[in-house]
Image (tube, rainbow, N blue to C red; front, side):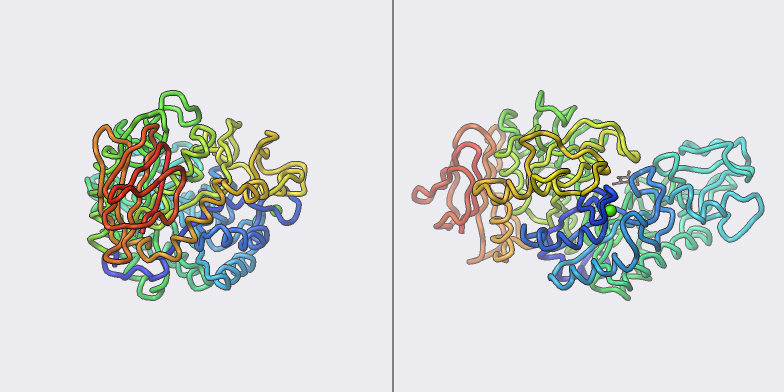
Length: 527
Ligand code: GLC
Ligand code: CA
């Protein structure tokens, strides 16, 4: 139970697969992935073992930030299909026992949204306060990013992210200038109510919830701990959650103590180094200044780093405690559309160990499309506001046909990896010891093992400074499992903790009496 509303039961066994819709599967030969294409690949996603989808924004947009600049929340972007196609996707997913969460962008719209067009007008109207406007055309914005000189209205307006993304008005925690409206005041509530209407629009058509973009960004100049933004979420959830008890809410927030208080079911780690310090997720996978090259890299899963797990746990355990206190969860991700892919910086073995860990730790894991086959980060010119993220957004590589089976067009949305050795779904499914097959086997084990649900018990067994072995248990009593992971180059051992058999292993893991001997670069689940 996150805050006041119980988390839907399906979240406890959810394994998410993130689909960047423009790059997954084109069905009509225009070079851009679309919803009918995605529907045609649902069986593939299910065969890997994922049972839930997060689709990046698929709504009408001028695509100045790949769709995170929404022009119409209620309309599927024509390049992806129609609203009926999205509803058909919900139905097709549900028929396969899968759930679909959409990406909700509540903090800002596109500058082309009709609310903003109306808000820009000089005369007062219904949408004048939907965005944050200062009092005069010469005002700066009290330290917030703003645009001047663009509107007939004699005022400047505040941005939430790019220039194309004006901030919606959820008010200020402590209004001190005449143009700053109070959080949860009349204007802020009108914005929140409009967002609730959008949630209701898609939930009533079959969506199973939302991943919420920049969920912590709503109230401006909020205090430490974001109390006013938390109250704003409580206000919205009080309206929508009772109506849709089976919907799940996953925040892009990265600070679970706050997101849980706001009422979300799950939060996930972001690739952000607040104050220059790596967070737990960075320490696992991206503890480097340039995550496109191997170079100097202190990531735990880089065999050359010699790093131990203690740094990660120091940062992770308080977050885990915060979610456990309310029955919520904190997810680990393989990567996402904002993050540089792990390949080629980490080797296939390193990624296999990392994914073994991700899939056995608490939380509902998120697999970014293509990570299961080892798609590689590529340095590419920016596309639709992607910048360095663009190289993680290339077309899914299905097979050895032209454009890797992504499209019949010769002009795909982004170039397909041209390397002759680029992995494809066909090549990786065929290789018995591939990352794909390891993932699929482990996901099957996960599905059959109650100890590996999202919220089942987690206890650290061995985590020591200077020791690359990490051992932990999941679950309780007879169902309990011991997980051991050793990304380092030396063997280590740990007590068997009552387990008597190796259920699944990568590398070399064996039982020697009541000790488990874990070889270099190895991972195992013991029962
Ligand atoms: C989130 C999205 C990112 C987007 C930004 C602005 O961080 O994940 O892709 O650019 O918000 O909406
Ligand atoms: Ca298409």
